[in-house]
Image (tube, rainbow, N blue to C red):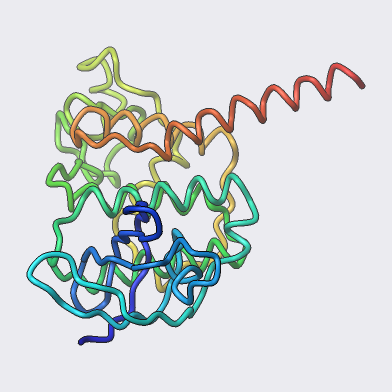
Length: 260
């Protein structure tokens, strides 16, 4: 038996009443365990096997999947669950974590990063911005670190020249005089450049309030999603749900505006 602190990254039904959960733990990295009877309405494990749940888990190890013997809820992140958009961005974080790292490879830094971002979301921080921060920090974990500090073509630094585009093909920013080298590069605002470099380098423990315009968010989403599509090979179900949610939200807003 071993007690671990963990965050539920994934929960899949197993048989009529069981659930297999994937945990990101502080002590053991990513592990899978069977929660027997967790789907029953009166199960003491039902509340600790939900997505995003942060808890203390007593694990009985086996040759394959371990078994969840006990679970104590530490935080359910209720306010995140109560907002569909926050839920979508939190889902991107946990799903990307699940798909990007191997089982039983311990990474205490990643555990703390995921936990801190979920806590900030739950306290009302902009969930979309936090999701893009996480995606930026996960790029080197996937093995395709971009050039954020120098022009990908001439190697001038951010202090020497202004970056005006991001080349997904080359994996980095382009300065004004080099933007012509990739006609498909995404234009970037000065704010987007500063944010991406900040996200990539800074310690989340120092995170304060970050206010980002809708246009800058759109710019960040365009670049990061395209970069992941090009290099990661990871398909996120949460991203599809988010796209559908945005379409529905835009439809409702336009319908409301037409009425007024």
